[in-house]
View 1 (cartoon, helix red, strand yellow):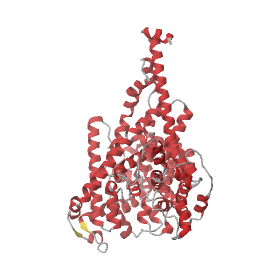
View 2 (view 1 turned 135 degrees about the horizontal axis):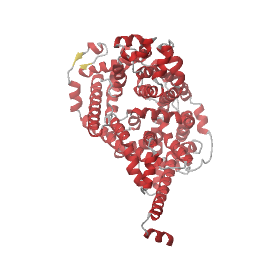
View 3 (view 1 turned 120 degrees about the vertical axis):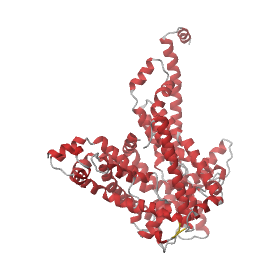
View 4 (view 1 turned 60 degrees about the vertical axis):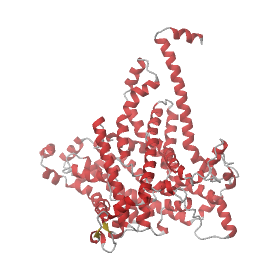
Length: 310
Length: 309
């Protein structure tokens, strides 16, 4: 302490450095404390769901389950296994996600490549054509009428994967990637060797662009997995419902059982309602949550490529 | 073969013909966009017509501005606009600055492992689906069994039924939105900060700058272009509050503060089959958004040289 005061009186660089490092150390302590608190804030609700899904629902309701599961049982999960609509929705979602992601790659990536070519005649027009819908659209009702009355696509498999597969944002991100990662000389050289546009795209561009394919595929898959809106608007038959729509009926509308129940069975189901909900959340989110930490670098990369242009 | 080198000098038609493959690559997307995005833009004229499904979009008779007037004169007009604006502005006020703070903080962490863990944890909620998120909100806030009223009552705060409290709706919407997306939204700022030249920091240190001063003098100015771009985009959707989350969180008790333009037009259009009325509300909404976007973009261009287009 005395050492410090002595140094502080002397007006030279040494004194400054000590004062600075002390202020900076306090600064560091604040930063790391806040960071730890924020990490807990982000993770705890998700952790809570997991422990609540295997604990006694009465203890959870009383607020006795906060840090660890208590009176563990897998009742909730065994009931979930018997919910056919949930698993049917699961299957539908896998189907929609796979087909939808594939279609999105097939339609968006080639556009992004074409728009990235400076020698594309009419480049300005086509860029506008693909970007404009980001900022303006016909809206829900006209889209519904066109899909319903003109194309008769309501309540079909196709409506879940085709009409909304062109995504302006994906095109912008992939175009930026192509512009910054494929040198124009490469195309010039390929052309001299007699390579046409299509062959160049499929045999040279695609193999060099696995990173952006991964980014777009992951975004598209997560988007399909998590969406309920289009299904709610355009699907009618319950057996076609994707997971999220089934989840909405369970979580928000409290529809647990396929048929109405009476007496003790209903009371028992009511007691278990929250347990089933917690379990359903875990089951429906598990694929994405467990996959995410392993593929997160692709997600970040995509956002950063998108940020290049701004 | 010699021609290949001089592509840029060739004429428009010539370039178009030699690059026919590029148009073929765009064809599927063009067809899909025309059918399902541009055709609905044309279909928006039903807002000016008395739409009857049997007559079709073109065959229905004109109604002028009848449906717009009906919306402007209805009591739901002020209600939906106010709710939309309150939720939207509140969301921007909270979720626009927070990712910037988070990125600045993240940039100050030197423990690599911890930093990585911090980032992954704060991004994770972004991947929860809207349905699950709303289910969590409703369960966690339940006055009888919810975790949050329990924790708050330990601290001596009694909340009552938050989901049934209309006044609490915008707060619930905004802060859960922040919880879910702030980490993810900070990625762009973190990327911008990682582009700072380390020599700038070294020079500042030689001049005796504290960490705090370095943030103010180096980091924040570095983020301004990203801030402006993202801010313009946010302003472009001021009346475009996401339908999905609000709709799921609505109930009879909070409807007075939770009926926004998009939920109202969904109910009018697809639940009560008032197609033209609903299309008019939607068109009004989109035009206002578009105009705001253009104005903010123009303004940003004037004062800062940063703009979208």
